[in-house]
Image (cartoon, rainbow, N blue to C red; front, side):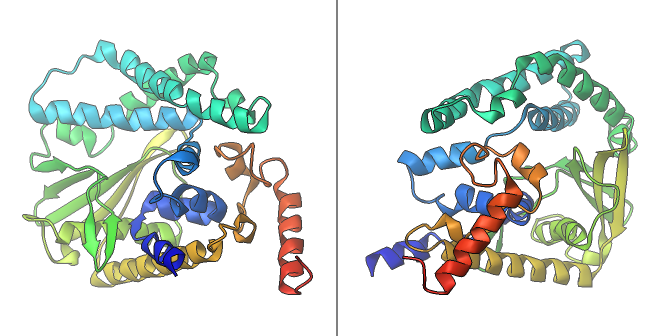
Length: 327
C-alpha cells in the first residue's frame, strides 16, 4: 500500500513543449527522463543526466538561442554589445556543455564496458564549424523581424521572458511562456524562437504556440482577451530565418487547453503503464530511428542498435505476456 502511494505522488504534473515533443518522439525516452524525476539521487539521477545528453549540433542551437537572448538583453539594459566576442561566447557555451556531458559518457561506458556510440557526436573538432554556422545565423537573425525593429528602435514596448516561468492550470504547472512580447498598436505579439523547425506546422504545433496566450492572459499588464494576440515563431529553415504567425481566437486557446489536458492524461497513463516493477518493456519505443541517433540512451536501449528489430521483439514479448505464457 505504501508503494502505491509513492507511485501516485510521483505522477507527472508538469507540461511543456519540450516534454510533449519527447513523449511523441519516444515514450521510452520520456519515461527515462521524467518517470523517475521525483526519486532523488543514485541511479535515478544518472538516468536523468543521461536523458539530458545532447549532440554537439543541438548544443550549437542552444548556444545560438542563448546569444540572441543575450543580445536583446544587452540592448534592453543599455549595455554595450561587443561584436568581436561573439564567436568566443558561442564557443564557450558549446565547449562548456560538452565538458559537462563528459561524465555522462563515462557512466554509459562503465555500464556497457565499451566505447559509447555517442562519442562520434561530441568531437571538439566539429566545434569550429559549428561556431561558424551559429555566427552566420546570429547575424541573419539581427536582420530579421522583430529583432531588427527592436534594435533600430521601431518597436519600443517589448519584454523578454524566461521559458522556466510557470503558469498554473488546475493542479498542473505549465511552461508555456514566450521568449519575446511586444505591442504594435492594439495588438500584443507573443513569440518563441525555434532555432530549427519545419516549414509547415502541424495542428499540434499550432496549438502548442497558442498555449502561450493562456500564459499571457495571466500576466499583469497584458491583455485578457485572446483576440488581441498575434502568435508568432521565428525559426530557421531552408537557409534563412522565417516567421510563422497567426491571429489568436478564443477557440484557439480553448483547443490548446484541451490538448494540454489530453497530453497530461496520456502522460499519466504512460507513467502508470511502467508499473511498480518499473517494467520498461511495456513502454513503446521511438517512432523514427532518427530520434535514436541523438538520444543519450542509445547504447543501452533495445532500439538504439536496430529500432525495427527491437519493436518486433517488444511486440512478441507483449503478446506472450498477454497470453499468459510469459513467466
